[in-house]
Structures are given as structure tokens and as C-alpha cells.
Image 1 (tube, rainbow, N blue to C red):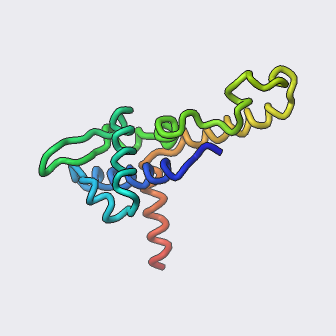
Image 2: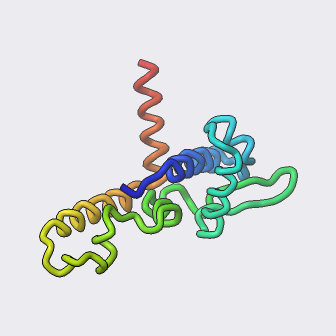
Amino acid sequence: MGLTVKTGYALRALLELAKAQKNGVRWMAVKQILSVQPMPRDFLEKILGELRAAGIVRSSRGRNGGYALAKSAGRITVKSVVDVLEKPLRMLRCVVSEECPRFGDCAVKFIWYRVNDVINRELSKLTLKDLMEMERKMKEGKKR
């Protein structure tokens, strides 16, 4: 399908940065992220490096440094994260390539085009702010 554990880890880390931003916390260290979202440290650091290079997060060195969102949670879409980490999100090779010998006359490929389009449109609609709201509602539901 094109989505991997890498994107899942990234979204979990970004969710923590979004919550920190909402609570007025300027920087969040990798250690702090890992304390609430367990995952391999080296992998998280690699992911954060890719997100920093893409302008989704920013970083600061030093004792009080760490990572922060580069823009508001409402302006970072799930699709923007997927596009950075899953290059490109495509279901089948025929959606992105003309290498298929049946490229010009295959009706089945149009199913994959449509499914791919729907997935991309839905991912474009969801933001980190939406994820925070989903998490809040899920936690409220557990308290009842």
C-alpha cells in the first residue's frame, strides 16, 4: 500500500510535538518523545531529521533544545508527512510508470488511479490538529 511503520512513528512523534506546542512547550527532546511514544531512538532521530529537512519540524541544540513543529498543527497535513517519508505513495507501479506493457489499454489501472486519488485526498484533509482532537475524544470515551 505504501504506508510503513516509519510514517506511523512520525505521526506519533508529531502528535506529541503538536500537544507540546498547544501547551506552550517550546522544545521537546527526543527522550521526552520516547517517554510517551516508545519506538527505536535511532529510527526516531532519522525520521525527525527527514522531517526537519522538509520543513515540518525545526530543531535546536543544547540543554534546553529539542524539536518543535515548524508551523501550527492545523497547517501540517498527514499527506505532507506521508509525501516526505513514503516517496511516492502509490498502490502499484502502473499508477506512476509507463513501464507496464499494457499501460495504454488497461482498464484495471483506472481502479488503482481512483483508489490512489481517494487516499491522497483523504490524507490531505487530515491535520495534526485533527489527530489531537481524535486522541482527545478517544481518551474521553475511555473515561466514561
